[in-house]
Image (tube, rainbow, N blue to C red; front, side, top):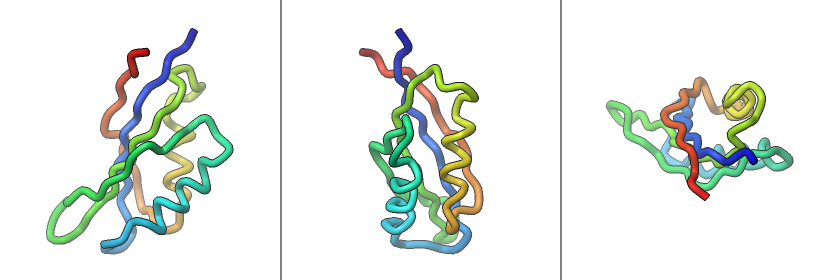
Length: 93
């Protein structure tokens, strides 16, 4: 039986942003009918007032292509410029 993993993705907005609520809402809308679940999001200071958004997702570990589809879903939000996978770990069950 396949387990689940937590994936932390850092999403970089195209512009300086203080309120990430609309971006998080759009991401939730994009993943609504998928195997991904957004469990946490928080802004992260990068430099000189520029903030990125760290997104914590739970997903099955046996998804074909790994995190590629998830990365593309997050990247498809208009306000997002780029994404990086920061961390992946298996959830003990």
